[in-house]
Image (cartoon, rainbow, N blue to C red; front, top):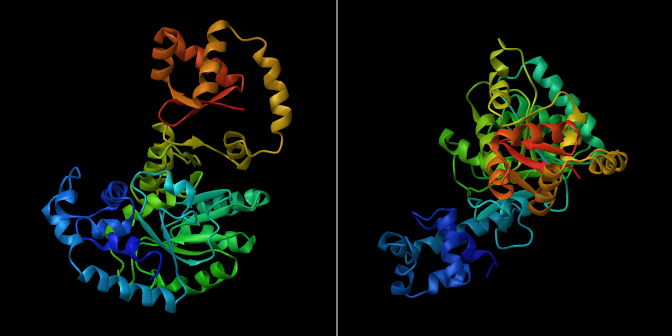
Length: 367
């Protein structure tokens, strides 16, 4: 029997989402035990009712799994269970991550720098130039580029990655027996040749449905260290991806646009609401992400700055060292520094290059 048989099966149970599936596995020990557990014991699990138990006992689920396994074997598709070591480690940290991923291509999601690049489907020449320039300049770090294979900025990111010999993955909202947009077939072939591929949480015969796209965006955000919103309208999938990334406590970056430019209104909104770092070039990204190659010189400068801190500044620095990052409220409560003073102290530490502010008024020490 395929080692992922029961992992796939649990994803097919009606009324069982990813969080509930993980709860069932946690209570029962593994996916196989979920299907062997006594009904009364299952009903003792919080929020597991008769409807879910009936789905677990429905043997037609196993028939669907057998059919899916035949498809997987025929087309050389990898199955990644969230219990497997091969499952993307960054995505595994997210509470609502998919219980199962289907991957066509190589699996390079662990032990690599990963950036998600997203934006409007109706991109302008300006957006394409920003995307192309960013990927070309970040190439020196050999990052994996992730996007959604859609028109506009998404496909631009995939193309530029391929042109620069970078692996790139498209996260799609349908089964791997189809492709949307179908016009991107040749691009997908090149993605596979360059060591990337396609990823989905949906089994075969899941057709393209616009309602599936927003949820797909959590995977784009979850697999990456950072999300770059290149060009975005005030509403759209790119902002949904940024929302997920912020919820996962991942860094979000965007480029500023003119106030009357409708294709950049989403980017300006992210900046205005402190949901994204404003960047003008790769150097800004490198600095915030600590990828830049001049970290050593910067650290020498910081050591000098550490020697000239006030008592309250030292307390904040030590607190951030101990906690990695913290909100302004956590700092105020833990260190008993008056709220009237904390903002100016934090601003001074930012200007000194010792800390930076993340979306949501979260502060982090720059090491």
